[in-house]
Image 1 (tube, rainbow, N blue to C red):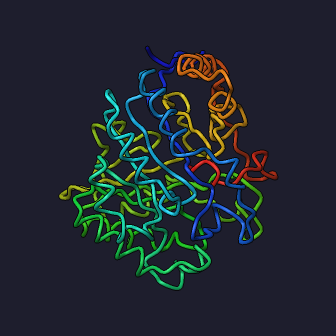
Image 2: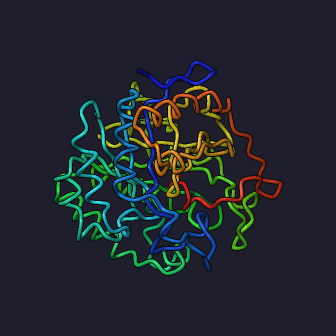
Length: 329
């Protein structure tokens, strides 16, 4: 069985956001003062396991656990262990801010995760604190080392903002090259109302970043740019194993090849990051007459509501009021 939307796209990748909570407050992700979900509204580890099993039985081959910050959620390692045993699942991944990897990197690897994404927006401690509001760069760098020692393959993610960290892009690439990691640069998405900066003023396109990097590196289009990449378009750094990815929701719409959906911490099946099209899976999971067959049927039917594309306008107030921490990006 496969999940196919009304535009003929096959959905084989699902991101499960296990919590809206985070120990950082990145300025592009959430407000400084946040009200988080009551615990009873968040799906249990058992419910997330049931969802993962249902998606895999429907042909999904890749699951990614996200947050908020997933490692602040008690039970995340147990969930990874449960999902890692699902027959038919080819890839189990995790996205994290890196602050808890010194404690959990080995357990993550033992649960069956081979690749993780780590957010890293600056290598300058003061700039890092400004971007995360109170993050400790040394803690994240130690987490990266712990993940490397555990044998996890790492990709770094950086949200590029023109006046905050765009000048650090070459240094971040050199760090990735030195450590043998890939890195992706992301155009900021207008999700949630923020007050720290103007999104239009801070916008910098992927093309501009690539032009800057071409002064220092020979970049070659990667022949398998779509492999494991999702919306990233990768360029190989000549002479090195590292790749540079660009995720460009504004300048290069990637919706035509979209193969993913997301589930929020409350069990809302979000069919597009840039739209509000969604279906309530928590109601199905908690129904008195719950059955796995009914859950699968509900998911299959939901695919017909997946929109063709998103529309972002940096000059207007965000139409999508949920913050990034609700969906994990």
